[in-house]
Image (cartoon, rainbow, N blue to C red; front, side):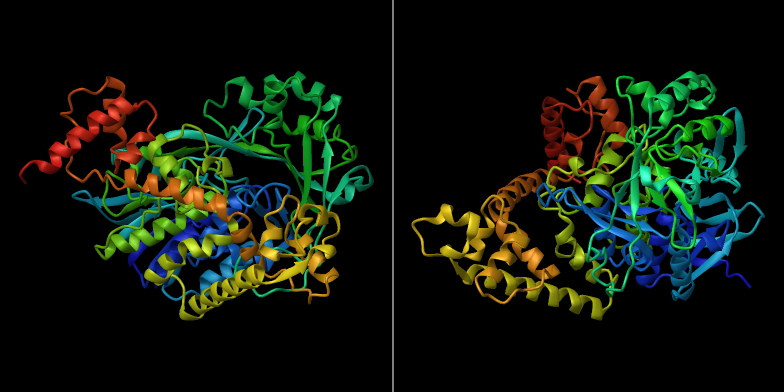
Length: 623
């Protein structure tokens, strides 16, 4: 028998839904995931990869909060690489190719073992509300599932409509139905519902590709794992490849733009700016003769290839012609066509920084329903929604991370203050304090929250404490160990007046990274130390300590403005002296602090000064 009474119900079994459900159960709640197919939890609908610039920082933060994504990709990844290593550590990012089906199986197996979690096959049709408070859901089949909190994490299934040329099919994913009744339920509750679009490339039979004409992209050895909880494993990494479109691709696609629903007017919603279709690329960047395509394997047990960069909604017959104009793909066979999918979302001004909706108490939104795009963005919102759903049930203060603490804080703040009208994607450039929000220090920033909310066990907490102790030991080693200047090779000329120099001083020299330092130590007869996580962390701390200290001063200034909290009950209606645009935006977004108000588009420094005066009067007025 299916239980119909839970602490939390999660609608949707994608990356957001899974992380939300697991976080809530780790905090002791009973949770139900309601999903169309219990065997497809966290299925990678689009590219078979986790991480990348800005995204990997989110994965590391999910991991620091006890989430699953990092462990799942470490267990099922087939290639691992670090990006942007020629630049500073603020933008270093890890990316891994996944065995797509193995990843999903790993997540499903983990969820089925999770105490307090029940997976229910079904389609949510209505959110049940009583006097402004959520009380559960009703499925499309009529089953009522009661709960104290509901998390909506529907991905592209909410009102999903797939486009391949002129053909339209109601679906959230190719071959899978859409969820249509839930959109009407949200509208009936007073939520604004909009439409967004995303797309995916065709899949190719790798046995029909001429790999000799493509440029190989090997993985990195040893593999850079995502999770600090993962045990290293033997891995025969697959090789990815790069190739390019040609003049023929450009001519063919351009000649058939009218056949694409993106250009014919069939699709009216907005797609992702930073992941355009191949049609959009040739239209928007007409001066470019070719575009880069990454050929990414879908896993170990399949020959299917994902041509990253060739997203399209052209008719299938044109897709077949176009793909064969790409270098190395002259004889490529399409196994599944590319398509565009439109779906419903709720502009995120309707949620609080806790991801609880402003309109219904106990109702949370996470993932693409908030206007984001990507597995990592979805999973990160999911874990925060799961934590705060339990906090809501326990009448506890919500966990809200600010922009100086985590990429999670940056993303959610962007969503609730700007309410994007196009699919939001995380980049390192969005984080103004990115030197303080590095991949390597996610644990330092967030473990205290994981311990506070019971998201990690004692063993994991001890592992973190051990890593911190090892890092401090490595810092002392680098500061206290010296090498003779005569052993510095090409760097000797920089220290002509010295006989020896500390390793920490060497690290601050241009061109001297950890690998160069280890080679110098070896040459000088010092025992070669392995490039462990602790040593890498120590090297970053020392090399960039001046810059980090400067950024910390900027963070302290930021926190002073954020501490000007705007309390519940503040009278937004009767504020004289504001411009009409500022008044309209403040009423719409109802920011929680002066700092947050300053980031709302259309609110000027003058408006902030007026708001600060009204805030002071509100605080000074008798209760």
